[in-house]
Image 1 (spheres, rainbow, N blue to C red):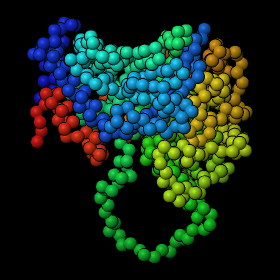
Image 2 (cartoon, rainbow, N blue to C red; image 1 turned 90 degrees about the vertical axis):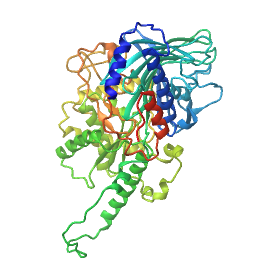
Image 3 (cartoon, helix red, strand yellow; image 1 turned 60 degrees about the horizontal axis):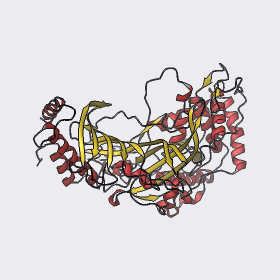
Image 4 (cartoon, helix red, strand yellow; image 1 turned 45 degrees about the vertical axis):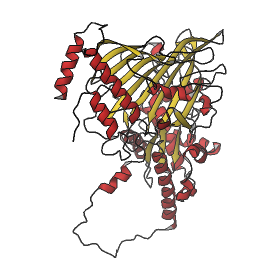
Length: 577
């Protein structure tokens, strides 16, 4: 019945002229009323959540060959307290991206002061259209067209603040899904910038994680010609990601709901096998306990992704290196993914961890194998985890102290030994004839490291090893096509040596699960389209969750009965009993 009603409303709306008169009884008026009511319910439904928020900003400078390239960057990671609006608790130390510094700022917009400090709360503000009156009393709504965003059909409206409606109002375009009238994307800017504080343009996306639950997840912001301080000009691109909405309700807790049936085979209270643990095994078990404690803690904090598809890809590469080098490592190697964009890797005992950002920018499997070989070498060489983490009380610390408490960086001597061992492992691997791209990747990273210092600054582990010597990697035979490009050693043509951020992995903001990006291959890539290590816009393929993963795993009641009733009322549904 709901589908029939929606189709009838959309058909009626499609017959209206572009600037139809918004009378109370018009189809446009009814749709706008539903959008406004649903958006209000959406804002209320977000209050119980405390997601992680990561903002990465790249300042830009002009380049004759590539248009623009990074020229410095900023980084912020914190936890949002949505019950308090745009309140943020920083997890980083305050030396990057403003670090949560609040002095010299005012208002809720995304601003930049004359001291060139970005305000992290301003980027979080972009998850909201308007926190103070998104309605027909403050805005003009113009219907544009219908449009699919992935599998979700939307109604597109241009919205503009009415005269004398006040500063900080949104002006731009909104996309509204046509079943329950949730705003799923909005693109524009807030009005009311001053000489000392500026609002930036942005494109904000929400993703569906269950019935009546569209969560803010991705925000892209860009300015190409913003003048400030009379003679200065600002150009930047920024990505903001939100995740960790369902922290505290992980798969481990769901195991308690499983019914276990004991086997009918009688249980023997005595054993005849050799199960005594010798000192070597005891030490291994102790280290594994420390390793498990750290991994579990990082996952519960929302910094480590749950086990999934991307881990299997990494473990396949590990297996290829082990088999071809006749390695029998016990306990077995596991791989996990850190959810942050910073490029880093480290080994926690026998668990190898790569950041999502590092996996994103690696151009091919051989380059990935090079990074894996380096961390695998730490394991082979017996570089152990600190056994103190086997005592669980060592992990009972405040979340904001995570990066100060944990540290898995190695000494320079250990790094040098791992580099040498990694080269030996690669020479016996299936990747030994494909290492030229990996060498180009590390060369490009070394060239750009001064322009992206925050992206390559690790939180927990070591910087990407750019000094590895790979005997089978041929040197570049042709000069690069541009100051930031690199030539392919075999063909002489300019090669893709690194991908932009977001080039490999996609993330579910509710469950924190990661999947490999399944995108259609593109044709010939122009030099300006390669964008190694760079920020790019988000263009999501939106889908609807048929089976809600929120209703079964959300004991916190993030979507209250009142909020759901309000959303249903916005969609014209009768209350359910």
